[in-house]
Image 1: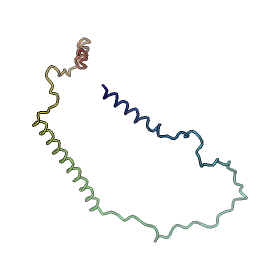
Image 2: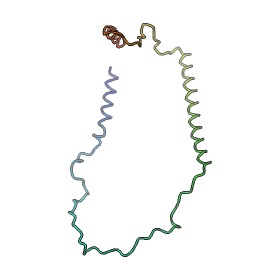
Image 3: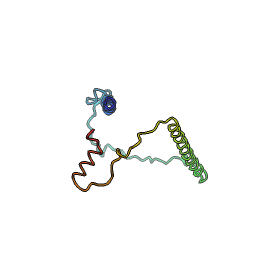
Image 4: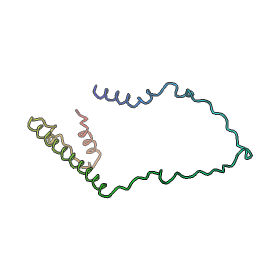
Length: 141
């Protein structure tokens, strides 16, 4: 029971940690930022038309990404699939070894006895439904 309370406490602390990490003056004005000045409309007479046009950069200075060959793409894909296959085989081997080790030491999970296994059939009436609920939740104990 204490374990659950500790986990709940850690969960609450984790969830409120962003609120704790915020600075205290977050609602107030930011320091170092000046107040905005109101914008004034630009008169058409003040606007001078720009006669200089922007030229695009010279073609020699543009760097293009070179196309990647299909062979390189296939090689990367096969390397990724090999990594997946190797990790799957490693997981299988490690878990098999772990299960054999548990069996040899005599450590096993809770084995279900026929009296602990409840039926998965749907009850026909209200009384059977209540009995099934009480059996599955072990309300009596």
